[in-house]
Length: 165
Length: 318
Length: 118
Image (cartoon, rainbow over all chains, first blue to last red; front, side, top):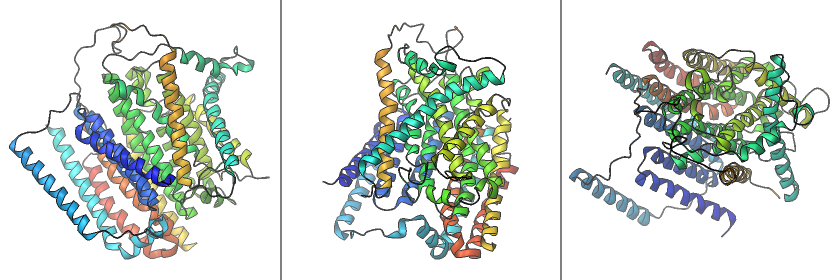
């Protein structure tokens, strides 16, 4: 194995570990930190796959902003006590079955279509990405701002509702 | 950097690391001397000439201090948290262009990588309160986290203007774009926004509310002692040194200067800003928290957005 | 030879981890320890800390969400900032529309008192 392959495997394992912590840790802080580990490992993998811009955005937005938001919520709600054990009710069982079938479907799909190994070219660089975003994907780019606008409105409405109670 | 033997590269890395860590250590000494000077006192002057050995004595003492891990804390988080800022600072030194051939790494997305490292360092203050699980720490953490997060936006907006001017996300390119005129002159608004945001990011006075002794006991590190406390403390000074180096890189033309260019210009500018940080702390009173937050959201962010649009217009026409 | 810059950053991060946590680990063994129950109490001016409950200001939640949204907005500006000189006015108008749409949201938060602290 080359050094690159070793580092890649290491990050893949770290990401997997993070995902498992999200699922099985008992205290909410550790769930959030597992998610953080998963996001950072994913960012490293993006960078190794020649998409450095996506990688650093992954760090800034997902690891830097989204997990911070989760931690804020944990702090505000003052979630000190461990979460309850796994949901073994009928609803939980249905969710579990659905999840397993979805995962196996995805596995079969990936096995059948055999994703072609494609190499990312200069699309991963910020300059090229800016060009694509501003010329070829103009409408989605502007729609993103509308999506963010909707998010702002929902945030304020929910926040204000919480204040009244 | 490209095209240099591995050994020279390793020597540079070790040298840079040693200089930055020494600078961070001596920033504590400088703080005490400057504070004393401003307040017309003497300051530490017994340990070695001018008290220069004081930081070494402090470090040695801290190593042998009793470590108290209070009963309500989460032991693992309590151990992890103090190291976060130090790790971030050391990782960031890899990206700083000290001189044309004294840059360890210059990736094409360097600026964003730096912002990412800075965002991850913010976890230090958030997790400190959550690790302690006591009210003063939690309140301090909540305050600190909201402050750090709010000032990250104006900071990123100011840097976006710089990127617009340089047309590149590489830190070396940004410095090279300032070979004639530093961005502090061509981008004065971005410069001022960045300078203010950096004070909030490093939790330095007048924005040192997270550790407001008079209101929050000690703030987010109330339950820390011994080396773990010292690491928060040292992290703050290391952060100040790195922040000064970044102001130099983004706005003062890095290694360029009147006369012969080189790493000494970088060092002089950085040291000036370290002094500036200390000077401001002992001159200005602490701001009120509501004013601090309103200032970020109602003044700095609109100003930053406006500055970017105007800069883009001038660039396109010019 | 050419060293991958991202590898250098990774290497420095590992060095940072070793230094930061190495020092913390060493100091764990160097200092003598004499813990007893009173010493391990959390800070509370000598009074026995009771059960505490606090109501966090909803403003913290709003700030965190506003930060999330503006952070994403700023991230969109970086590829634009690199490319704006090639696409000139076209790119400028696009970003103007992007910012104007978000400005509506910004004014909405402001008017609803989402930026106020008491």
